[in-house]
Image (tube, rainbow, N blue to C red):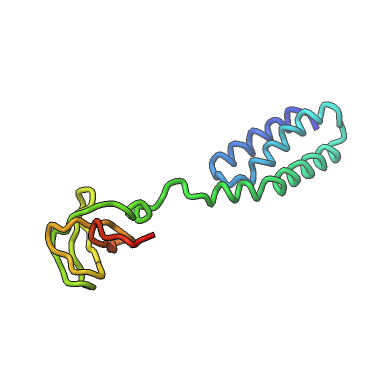
Length: 144
């Protein structure tokens, strides 16, 4: 096959990869690009296709673990992860084990604590879920 057919194949596969972002077709687009250059030396279309397949599969299997690891890495921390350690103030108090309301970074949160919380008490977040934070009074920590 002519070199330009492999070049068109590389471009088409690359455009499809850009629309899917799966990192599967990327390596076959690269393989088609390499085959474009090799087709100037290897004139038999069957050998060209074999080179394309071998190069594409080799790139895919060599880099798939890296691509999988990169895609699974969280790009930013969850909001609940960033809440731990933040300071707040009790707005409405409650007995130990009940639900109080605390203000953290200007937002109101439902809060639980193992100790009695009174309005105005400074608190620190020790754990967080999507709707409730667990707090302790500020200045009362666990000894290390």
